[in-house]
Amino acid sequence: MPFCICTALERSRTPDSILVFAWQLHYNMRQQRVVSPAAGFRRRSEIFLYHFLLLYRVSLVEPVHIILFSFGFKYGPPEADTVFDVRFLPNPYWVPELKPFTGLHQPVAQYVLNNSTGQEFLISVEFFLEFFLGVHQKAGREEIRLAVGCTGGRHRSVAVTESLRRFLDGQPFTADVFHRDIDRE
Image (cartoon, rainbow, N blue to C red; front, side, top):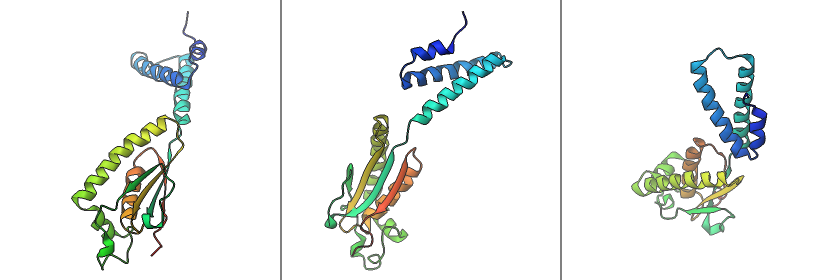
């Protein structure tokens, strides 16, 4: 009796079991293509259907949307799922040449991040975020709010937030970035 895709799909009630089923079929088809490249119309139509199922299931997994923002503790903490306190990093506020600028400016970002503490912190946070965001995506979370705070919200938190934005650009997540207190004095 020939294999019937309808029967197999009826047995696969959950989206995850359909995904496993589609991956197994995809692997088997790739193996068969090497042995028998001249498949009949029925085989090609099944291949199309299997590939469609695989693409459909993968497209159902929505990426986690991340709202990443900087803030100043002196203006109050924000509502967030996770808050990173970066007040331990070097403070450009006390450097007269850097004080008028923000963490968006390269000299300020370099002052804050280009030291052993800044680099170690970024590596640790990036490692944490890979785990943290992956777990939340598997759990079905749609949105995660990450906040980075320093004293005034103009220098250190902005520089770190921008660095994390660049890190997240290379990840399968969507992200919006806001600097809540960057224009305050």
